[in-house]
Length: 468
Image 1 (cartoon, rainbow, N blue to C red):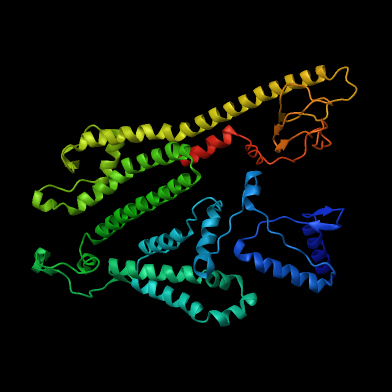
Image 2 (image 1 turned 180 degrees about the vertical axis):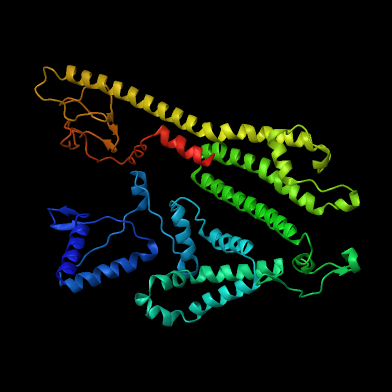
């Protein structure tokens, strides 16, 4: 008991250390981010805490303008009201990286693609129905199970917290199992096969009939059934994988357009899209072209797509006779290979180069400003020699006129980092001076933009290498 109380008091003291003490009003002031939808609930919680503690002065929650914090360089944290269904998918997304407040949240896309790709990998009607029933039992008894959530073991907490994920995964596995015509590894003949066995000659397909949904069950009994199913699932995985990666590039384009960052568009999105579609997009096109071509009618063997992809990189300008999909294939592969070759250094070097150039330009302007400021200080010191009163206001960190500011002169407005500092009409400076010699914020101009983050070329290069 004493350990629990000690830890509780330590946690309270740790929380209070985040507050600022106002000696004039003898109160603690804390600043934090609260969603607008939770603002009234936060105020009610503060009032309840004050009443429970018996304080005479209740806590006060004052809402500030969020734009002021953004201008000062403080970035708003991310907040996603995911709910029960999207909550587990949001946790999966956050495990890879929490989206910033100005980025598109990919969790809703993850709620669709994650269970569906699971179904593509583990498509089986029997297993899918078992998984759906298991997760559905938790959802059906959700209120009763929630009462004993604190007493759950670690083994049970995993399916309980991921019940909606398991439920959607089971539905996707059932759907994919219907496409594969698999139920516990056995073929299902729901609509009758379109193939008929003709003695020892094998199977012959009825030209006027097609199996209405999924793969014809006769392929499970064919001698080349295993190679056919593996080839079909591998090609299907490539198609869905390229589609998902294209969706991710679309999300990155949306983020770049929202931030109005042309550099992200032209130095990341465009080369990534060109490389993806010139290599793997071309492979997807070849898959569909191979599927729709009747190679028996053309009386030639179907080309191997693995060989096609190897030749695409090793010898793009020449196509072997047994690997030709369409006329003019060699020229198309040569052009696409050139696009992919150019995209790699474009992705790797363009963004670090322009960021470095922008950083050097900004640092150059800062150095010139510092030199001008030093010259102004020398002028102020020289002009103030012989006067009884030193300059009223130090121009440290401000852009001011090189003229001296002396008692009896009309001081010009100083446009500084903090705002505008103006002198009084009687010749005395109306602005206060801080302990560091800088003027206090008294003007009406908006605050200057926040200082830029520290530039690390190595970190930028590593980040870009990962993207590449």
